[in-house]
Image (cartoon, rainbow over all chains, first blue to last red; front, side, top):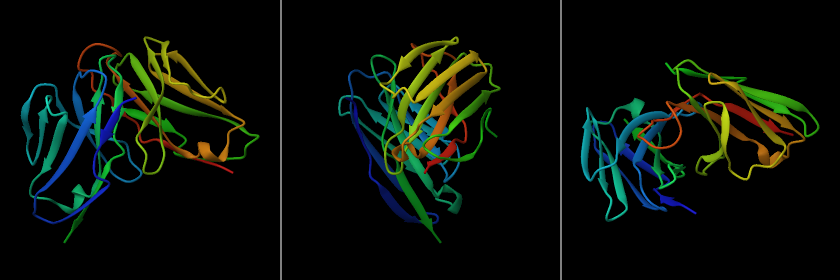
Amino acid sequence: GQNIDQPTEMTATEGAIVQINCTYQTSGFNGLFWYQQHAGEAPTFLSYNVLDGLEEKGRFSSFLSRSKGYSYLLLKELQMKDSASYLCAVRDSDYKLSFGAGTTVTVRA
Amino acid sequence: ETGVTQTPRHLVMGMTNKKSLKCEQHLGHNAMYWYKQSAKKPLELMFVYNFKEQTENNSVPSRFSPECPNSSHLFLHLHTLQPEDSALYLCASSQAAGEGAETQYFGPGTRLLVL
Protein backbone atom coordinates (compact mmCIF):
# COMPACT_ATOMS: atom_id res chain seq x y z
CA GLY A 1 0.00 0.00 0.00
CA GLN A 2 0.90 3.65 -0.14
CA ASN A 3 2.59 5.34 2.81
CA ILE A 4 2.26 9.07 3.38
CA ASP A 5 3.57 10.60 6.60
CA GLN A 6 3.06 14.04 8.03
CA PRO A 7 3.17 15.37 11.60
CA THR A 8 -0.05 15.15 13.58
CA GLU A 9 -0.02 18.61 15.11
CA MET A 10 1.88 21.90 14.93
CA THR A 11 1.45 25.14 16.85
CA ALA A 12 2.72 28.55 15.83
CA THR A 13 2.25 32.21 16.67
CA GLU A 14 0.31 34.71 14.58
CA GLY A 15 2.65 36.36 12.06
CA ALA A 16 5.17 33.52 12.18
CA ILE A 17 6.13 30.89 9.58
CA VAL A 18 5.28 27.20 9.77
CA GLN A 19 6.59 24.39 7.57
CA ILE A 20 4.59 21.17 7.30
CA ASN A 21 6.61 18.24 6.01
CA CYS A 22 5.27 15.28 4.08
CA THR A 23 7.19 12.17 3.11
CA TYR A 24 5.80 9.52 0.85
CA GLN A 25 6.46 6.04 -0.47
CA THR A 26 4.11 5.18 -3.29
CA SER A 27 3.96 2.90 -6.30
CA GLY A 28 4.92 5.51 -8.84
CA PHE A 29 4.33 9.23 -8.73
CA ASN A 30 2.06 11.51 -10.72
CA GLY A 31 1.81 14.60 -8.59
CA LEU A 32 1.41 15.79 -5.02
CA PHE A 33 -1.44 17.91 -3.68
CA TRP A 34 -1.93 19.96 -0.55
CA TYR A 35 -5.42 20.61 0.79
CA GLN A 36 -6.64 22.76 3.68
CA GLN A 37 -9.56 21.56 5.78
CA HIS A 38 -11.22 23.66 8.45
CA ALA A 39 -13.14 21.77 11.10
CA GLY A 40 -16.51 20.64 9.78
CA GLU A 41 -15.80 21.90 6.27
CA ALA A 42 -14.71 20.56 2.89
CA PRO A 43 -11.04 20.10 2.09
CA THR A 44 -10.05 22.91 -0.28
CA PHE A 45 -7.28 22.71 -2.85
CA LEU A 46 -4.12 24.68 -2.04
CA SER A 47 -1.36 23.53 -4.36
CA TYR A 48 -0.12 20.95 -6.84
CA ASN A 49 3.49 19.90 -7.51
CA VAL A 50 4.60 17.44 -10.14
CA LEU A 51 8.11 18.73 -10.88
CA ASP A 52 10.88 19.35 -8.35
CA GLY A 53 11.06 22.80 -6.90
CA LEU A 54 9.05 25.46 -5.20
CA GLU A 55 5.57 26.65 -6.16
CA GLU A 56 4.54 29.94 -4.56
CA LYS A 57 0.99 31.20 -4.13
CA GLY A 58 0.82 34.29 -1.99
CA ARG A 59 1.49 33.39 1.64
CA PHE A 60 1.57 29.66 0.84
CA SER A 61 4.39 27.82 -0.92
CA SER A 62 4.85 24.12 -1.65
CA PHE A 63 8.11 22.34 -2.36
CA LEU A 64 8.74 18.94 -3.92
CA SER A 65 11.76 16.64 -4.17
CA ARG A 66 10.82 13.50 -6.05
CA SER A 67 14.17 11.80 -5.48
CA LYS A 68 13.71 12.16 -1.72
CA GLY A 69 9.98 11.43 -1.68
CA TYR A 70 9.51 14.68 0.20
CA SER A 71 7.36 17.76 0.11
CA TYR A 72 6.64 20.64 2.42
CA LEU A 73 3.97 23.29 2.67
CA LEU A 74 5.20 26.64 3.94
CA LEU A 75 2.74 29.04 5.51
CA LYS A 76 4.05 32.58 5.97
CA GLU A 77 2.67 35.53 7.94
CA LEU A 78 0.35 33.21 9.80
CA GLN A 79 -3.16 34.42 10.51
CA MET A 80 -5.71 33.03 12.95
CA LYS A 81 -7.83 31.84 10.03
CA ASP A 82 -4.96 29.53 8.99
CA SER A 83 -5.79 27.27 11.95
CA ALA A 84 -6.91 24.12 10.14
CA SER A 85 -5.88 20.63 9.11
CA TYR A 86 -3.50 20.40 6.13
CA LEU A 87 -3.67 17.25 4.03
CA CYS A 88 -0.86 15.92 1.85
CA ALA A 89 -2.02 13.68 -1.01
CA VAL A 90 -0.01 11.80 -3.63
CA ARG A 91 -1.20 10.47 -6.98
CA ASP A 92 0.41 7.15 -7.85
CA SER A 93 1.19 5.43 -11.15
CA ASP A 94 -2.47 4.33 -11.44
CA TYR A 95 -3.53 7.95 -10.92
CA LYS A 96 -5.10 7.06 -7.59
CA LEU A 97 -4.94 9.71 -4.88
CA SER A 98 -3.73 8.63 -1.42
CA PHE A 99 -3.90 10.97 1.56
CA GLY A 100 -1.87 11.45 4.70
CA ALA A 101 -3.70 11.67 8.02
CA GLY A 102 -3.39 15.45 8.06
CA THR A 103 -1.51 17.99 10.18
CA THR A 104 -3.57 20.13 12.53
CA VAL A 105 -2.08 23.62 12.71
CA THR A 106 -3.07 25.84 15.61
CA VAL A 107 -2.24 29.53 15.34
CA ARG A 108 -2.00 31.35 18.67
CA ALA A 109 -2.29 35.09 19.18
CA GLU B 1 -18.02 28.66 -1.98
CA THR B 2 -17.87 25.01 -2.99
CA GLY B 3 -19.35 23.76 -6.27
CA VAL B 4 -20.00 20.41 -4.62
CA THR B 5 -22.94 20.06 -2.24
CA GLN B 6 -23.86 17.20 0.04
CA THR B 7 -27.02 16.36 1.96
CA PRO B 8 -27.70 15.73 4.71
CA ARG B 9 -24.86 17.40 6.58
CA HIS B 10 -25.51 15.29 9.68
CA LEU B 11 -27.16 11.88 10.01
CA VAL B 12 -27.83 9.62 12.96
CA MET B 13 -29.07 6.14 12.17
CA GLY B 14 -29.61 2.81 13.85
CA MET B 15 -27.96 -0.34 12.62
CA THR B 16 -31.20 -1.58 11.03
CA ASN B 17 -32.02 1.65 9.19
CA LYS B 18 -31.66 2.38 5.50
CA LYS B 19 -30.60 5.85 4.47
CA SER B 20 -29.01 7.57 1.49
CA LEU B 21 -26.39 10.28 1.16
CA LYS B 22 -26.62 12.65 -1.78
CA CYS B 23 -23.92 14.57 -3.60
CA GLU B 24 -24.35 17.09 -6.41
CA GLN B 25 -21.64 18.92 -8.33
CA HIS B 26 -22.19 22.12 -10.29
CA LEU B 27 -18.75 22.23 -11.93
CA GLY B 28 -19.44 20.36 -15.16
CA HIS B 29 -17.12 17.54 -14.08
CA ASN B 30 -17.28 13.95 -15.28
CA ALA B 31 -15.77 12.08 -12.36
CA MET B 32 -17.17 11.74 -8.84
CA TYR B 33 -15.76 10.08 -5.74
CA TRP B 34 -16.83 8.89 -2.30
CA TYR B 35 -14.32 9.06 0.56
CA LYS B 36 -14.55 8.08 4.22
CA GLN B 37 -12.77 10.27 6.77
CA SER B 38 -12.37 8.88 10.30
CA ALA B 39 -10.82 10.83 13.14
CA LYS B 40 -7.02 11.03 12.93
CA LYS B 41 -6.96 8.73 9.89
CA PRO B 42 -6.24 9.46 6.22
CA LEU B 43 -9.09 9.88 3.80
CA GLU B 44 -10.03 6.48 2.43
CA LEU B 45 -11.18 6.26 -1.16
CA MET B 46 -14.36 4.18 -1.43
CA PHE B 47 -15.74 4.51 -4.96
CA VAL B 48 -14.92 6.28 -8.22
CA TYR B 49 -17.30 7.01 -11.07
CA ASN B 50 -15.99 8.27 -14.40
CA PHE B 51 -18.59 9.31 -16.98
CA LYS B 52 -21.26 7.52 -14.87
CA GLU B 53 -19.38 4.23 -14.90
CA GLN B 54 -17.95 2.81 -11.69
CA THR B 55 -14.22 2.46 -12.18
CA GLU B 56 -13.11 1.83 -8.61
CA ASN B 57 -14.51 -0.09 -5.64
CA ASN B 58 -11.86 -0.03 -2.96
CA SER B 59 -12.94 -3.25 -1.21
CA VAL B 60 -15.91 -1.52 0.34
CA PRO B 61 -18.42 -3.71 2.25
CA SER B 62 -21.69 -4.33 0.43
CA ARG B 63 -23.65 -2.45 3.11
CA PHE B 64 -22.47 0.63 1.18
CA SER B 65 -24.04 0.85 -2.27
CA PRO B 66 -23.21 3.72 -4.64
CA GLU B 67 -25.38 5.02 -7.44
CA CYS B 68 -24.49 7.53 -10.14
CA PRO B 69 -27.52 8.35 -12.32
CA ASN B 70 -25.68 11.12 -14.21
CA SER B 71 -22.39 13.00 -14.10
CA SER B 72 -23.76 15.60 -11.70
CA HIS B 73 -25.26 13.36 -9.03
CA LEU B 74 -23.86 10.66 -6.80
CA PHE B 75 -25.61 8.72 -4.05
CA LEU B 76 -24.39 6.42 -1.31
CA HIS B 77 -27.07 4.05 -0.08
CA LEU B 78 -26.56 2.75 3.44
CA HIS B 79 -28.09 -0.31 5.08
CA THR B 80 -27.37 -2.41 8.17
CA LEU B 81 -24.37 -0.30 9.08
CA GLN B 82 -22.08 -0.91 12.05
CA PRO B 83 -20.99 1.59 14.71
CA GLU B 84 -17.47 1.59 13.23
CA ASP B 85 -18.95 3.06 10.05
CA SER B 86 -19.47 6.32 11.92
CA ALA B 87 -17.33 8.89 10.11
CA LEU B 88 -17.37 11.91 7.81
CA TYR B 89 -18.32 10.88 4.27
CA LEU B 90 -16.89 13.21 1.66
CA CYS B 91 -17.87 13.50 -1.96
CA ALA B 92 -15.49 14.95 -4.54
CA SER B 93 -15.51 15.63 -8.25
CA SER B 94 -12.91 16.26 -10.95
CA GLN B 95 -12.86 16.91 -14.66
CA ALA B 96 -12.24 13.22 -15.28
CA ALA B 97 -10.61 10.30 -13.50
CA GLY B 98 -7.37 8.89 -14.78
CA GLU B 99 -4.49 10.51 -16.59
CA GLY B 100 -3.82 14.19 -16.22
CA ALA B 101 -3.55 16.69 -13.45
CA GLU B 102 -7.20 16.76 -12.49
CA THR B 103 -7.72 18.41 -9.14
CA GLN B 104 -10.46 16.98 -6.98
CA TYR B 105 -12.94 19.39 -5.43
CA PHE B 106 -14.67 18.29 -2.24
CA GLY B 107 -18.08 18.77 -0.75
CA PRO B 108 -18.56 19.63 2.95
CA GLY B 109 -19.30 16.05 3.89
CA THR B 110 -22.01 14.18 5.77
CA ARG B 111 -21.22 13.49 9.43
CA LEU B 112 -22.67 10.02 10.06
CA LEU B 113 -23.24 8.47 13.47
CA VAL B 114 -24.38 4.86 13.66
CA LEU B 115 -25.90 3.83 16.97
